[in-house]
Each structure stands twice: as C-alpha cells, then as structure tokens.
Image (cartoon, rainbow, N blue to C red):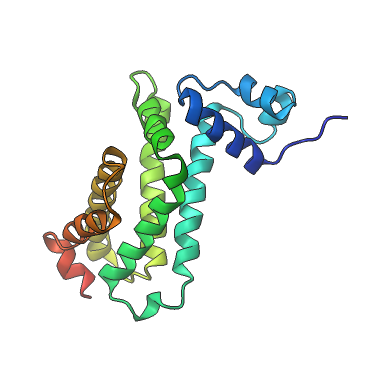
Length: 191
C-alpha cells in the first residue's frame, strides 16, 4: 500500500518543482508522480492548486506569529515590532521568492475572479495577524485607519521585496520604516 504524504510534504514538493518549471507550468499530477502517489493523495489535503498557495502564505503567517513570541518584542516600539514581524513574514517566503511572485501573478490573471477575491481576504487576514502579533490595541476608527495604512505598508513592502530580490535587507527595512512613518500611521503607532 503506498504511503500517504503529509500536507507539508506535498507543499514542499510542489514548491521545489515550481522552482524549476514555474508556478504556471506546475501540474498536480506531476507532484503526485514525484511523490509516487495518486492524485487522490494530493486531493486529500488540497482540493485545488490554489490551496497550495494559501498553504504557502499560511506558512509565512506562522513564521510571523512565531517571531511574535520572541521575548524581545515587548520592549520594542510599535513601529519596530511591526518591522520585525513583517521581516519574519517575508523570511518565511524567502526560500521560494520567485515562485511566490508567480503565484500572485497566477491569482491576478483575468478570469480568476474567485482567486482574486480570496487574495483580498488573504491580505486582510495577514494584516490582522500582523497587528495581533504586534499587540496593537487601537479601536474603532483608529483601528480602521491603522488597518488601512498597514495594508498599504504591507503591500508596498511585499511588492518591493518581490521585485528587488538582490536588494540588501537593510534597504528593505529602511523602506518599510518609511512606509510605517508615513501620514497618519505615525500618529497611530505612537499610541
């Protein structure tokens, strides 16, 4: 009887194959073949290819939340906590940076409205976890404003990170700090 791979093994196999062929050309039957299992073993964990994308971003969220457990974060300013956490999130994606960008382009293809809607939910979910891990306590209109500005900082930093793979981490951190200090966000973070 063939062994049944775990969800993590399937994701790792898919990512490694996509590093070679690209996300668009990755087929689930190839993942199954590489793992020497049937497609039913893949479907047990992932109902569609995009579920692998969600699992990949879940892994990045987990890296961010694990960093949030660091005892050193409590002593840092809100801005520095946010910086550390987002850098941990990006670090969780670093091993497959090019594939991560290809995943986003796949989601944005015309006709993939269902994936685009899920992408918006993913951004919202990650920003919510980012705020929680940073122990942000803003409420009501302040919370809404903070979430909006953090979403902008998150997206701008993430896109920059994807587009500039050779950039030094210090430069990326500087960009993120500038985004966190812009406009009303600086007021909210000092609260």
